[in-house]
Image 1 (cartoon, rainbow over the protein chains, first blue to last red):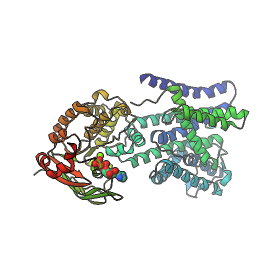
Image 2 (cartoon, rainbow over the protein chains, first blue to last red):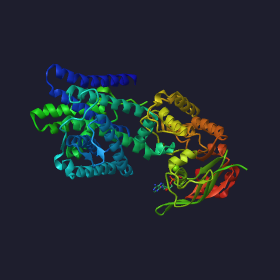
Image 3 (cartoon, chains in turn green, red):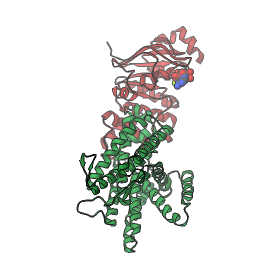
Image 4 (cartoon, each protein chain N blue to C red):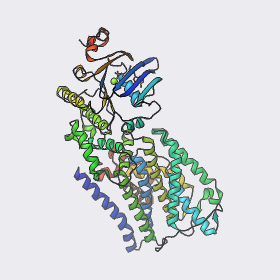
Length: 327
Length: 249
Ligand SMILES: Nc1ncnc2c1ncn2[C@@H]1O[C@H](COP(=O)(O)OP(=O)(O)O)[C@@H](O)[C@H]1O
Ligand SMILES: [Mg+2]
């Protein structure tokens, strides 16, 4: 038991260190592109960390997390758009380019949306839950393409990246470090939540709802809260992603994106704290390097996924760090 | 006058054409062990399910602590002081025995909406859970993953979880099954010692245990309570012998 614990901790620390070291190395080698690749890994990992809370720990297989990812992105994009135009949001709110305001807005909005979606979809389980979350995300997707003010199908460019106090968000390394810090914050927050009383209830909801109710804890509010927390984290990742790309569009809301976030979690190891980081890193490396040789890279990704699902039940983390520790 | 913990009146529940609960009247008093016996398929577990809340009755009343509990959820009833064990255990299988009991302790203490403090470092929670495990004789298996416990041990674990709720009424569905003679005897003594603290509705096939423990016995056959009485009354009842006890001899 202790052995696997230590092994997982070592793997976790190594992963965190590698991701931090990559852009430094890129800078030293004067290959700035890799800084943005590492930033992408950090941001998509954070999206996965969010989903992992619902899917991995709460057993809620959401196929609609792109809704939160995209809405987070649109909050950043719409803020930048109004700031650039010098207009007000719906003529009500003055535009802001302050990330310290934009992020909480994205988080709160995604939380609210998750309450709405959760209230309906958490009444179902299994395949129905998967389909309902997908359906909600598709609704948001069509909303995204049908609002011409915010680019419709073409999406919205972010001409000027939103700003942070003191440091410059325009500097690639600084922006990486900000995203990295938020990823680590997200992982730390997850670990606290999972180890808390709420975390115990959430994980029991995954394992056996009857057990949870039998001790007097109503499963529904526990699951809803887990779903909302999960959505908030993924929403923040979406806001970062839009800033990184200088663009937000309906593609951030599409079901492909939901599937991709799900792949990070499954590839990395469902219900493993650093699983989404391992999964997103492998995914993006594959996309980048195999994608360089052949645009059939998704075929290889499919093979690897199949291998993971068939042979390494705990995903990458299961493969390198051993079985999950449950005591 | 004793306090009535549970009162069931005119309860009915059908599965299609099958009457699993057929006009059942039954009560449990404080400080009482009320045994429910009857052949397999008589509807004992179905009755427990309706009392605990997992199954909705078609008709009739269930009052617990003088309150109509039929509209209340399973969780609400548990919080009122209804603890139960299942005939087929229903536990969190992937985690340790201790964690299962900790969840129950945490549920009784109130809020599960605490997101920061770590359960691992909550000594009070652990100590209390260990006490319950010790009571049912599972202290040595506290760190064992539940799926690796024997069926008998899982039943004991469910009893520990139920006790951690400090319930007013315990519903036990065949707690002795899979225990072996020594285990049954130990559990019998333990249940005897619980009487003062909690009323028990006990479903059990082990007649030695039932006759030793029960203050009253109800006999359920085809969903109907055909007789309720003291141990002696039930032993001597011709109807019961014919319908049930006779089959065993
Ligand atoms: N969910 C259900 N659907 C249909 N029939 C059921 C269901 N649960 C129990 N039954 C039937 O109801 C009868 C009573 O079952 P049960 O309460 O488990 O009996 P006991 O616990 O006394 O052995 C049995 O005939 C059983 O097959
Ligand atoms: Mg039964």
